[in-house]
Picture 1 (spheres, rainbow, N blue to C red):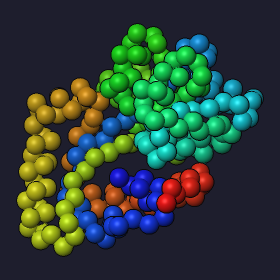
Picture 2 (picture 1 turned 30 degrees about the horizontal axis):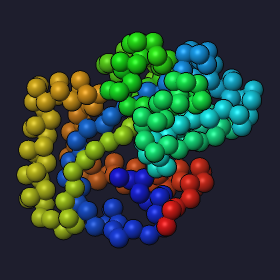
Picture 3 (picture 1 turned 120 degrees about the vertical axis):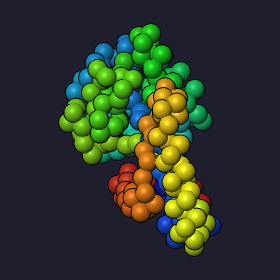
Length: 228
């Protein structure tokens, strides 16, 4: 995953040099949630509270470098907020503390968030995607809420070892994209909160290079310290 470049001072591989991009598989949006008791019904409510009490509000993540951490940092920086990051061992612990009010906000993948939203256990403020999400059509995007630089998608892709012959890369890409185009597979993925994102190898390579560059920039701006 691209966040590895900001979590480690040295890696045994270079994501752009040692891997051959084959195909993008899916993206998985997150939803910005808060406990109903917090009184936040929109991002504007959350931002106003954070700016009125700088340094007092906090956000959870499933661990340093996790998708929820990256999404939270992107939002914090885009909105210019002084809030505290609280990393947890995993999403279960983070979600438990959010629902009890110990945590102010949290970015959670759509699939596990959906039943909690429907049951009124959490309030959905925005989705992290450029477009609205099929499973949450009434929830605005984070860009619609005024923070386009806070968009973040957790993604999955397929790569091969560097210097894999292009004929093999192209053949694998065709088969992956064929599978992603099958109605049954698309429906199953969408029900899990994932969106199929077929790309050519060149498109995926461009996306990957941009994502790595964005992660490096985020690591510097958010002062994320490598662990080793």
